[in-house]
Image (cartoon, rainbow, N blue to C red; front, side, top):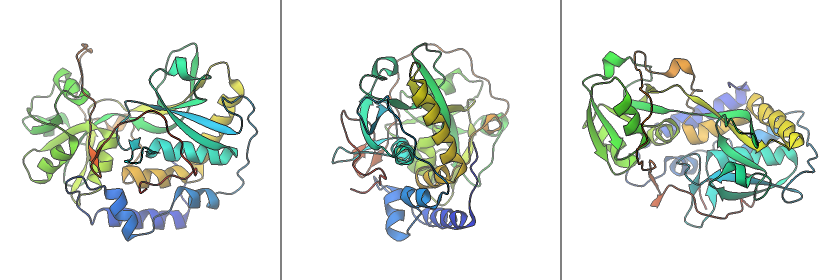
Length: 331
């Protein structure tokens, strides 16, 4: 999913990325908040205002009339969703869902969900960040982001090969899915574990490890605070992330799919990716580190990968309403 950018939007995104590169992520500092204070980056509202020919669709089959109630995965990590100190939801999923509601002429409300099938049509209309479900009760439409586990390193962005990583020191969060994937891979590395991703990236910057392996989107968010850390490739094949809608609600499926595609084509997704992922390019099959294979999964206990943002551990808390549809990190 690669959106078409207008010249003005390219300039604004470039200004944002240039400024992001000038700041260092120290302690719990949030690079997005630091950058927004230094440069006026394009907001989701501005991008929506610049898009031409957008039509608001009438949607009748909603949990709450006039409101798009959006389910957020309770296990989502930064930057897809962050719960601020005031309890408000913020992040990539929130901005995209807010833009979606704006285009539909609806208010937006966010709720935490843990079971998609049980939530759709009862506590929420859609659920963000869904993969292909193979479910009879839910259908995934659109594709607005990707899920993958990725290596980050110091140096320019490039996709490395297995031989580049073999023998290297790799930083990971202890007990994470990333560590399980590395264990199941054919890579031969020295592992160094950390309690959270902030510490792992700090070690990478200090030269204490050669790579950090973590959720690709979390890594893209954190690397924006450094001048010399970049994506080195994914350990697995990226999976498209879309929006789950009740399988019986074909009206909402069609409207959400059309509107999601419009947001991708009119540059709004580019603005959101610049804000939350430092402009990371769309991840595809070619983003995977060549030569790496992963054996079949073995069920093991895992710890969700976490990072701190302004002293708040990333994670979702129950119950929140977005307020204005365009959401910002500072509140």
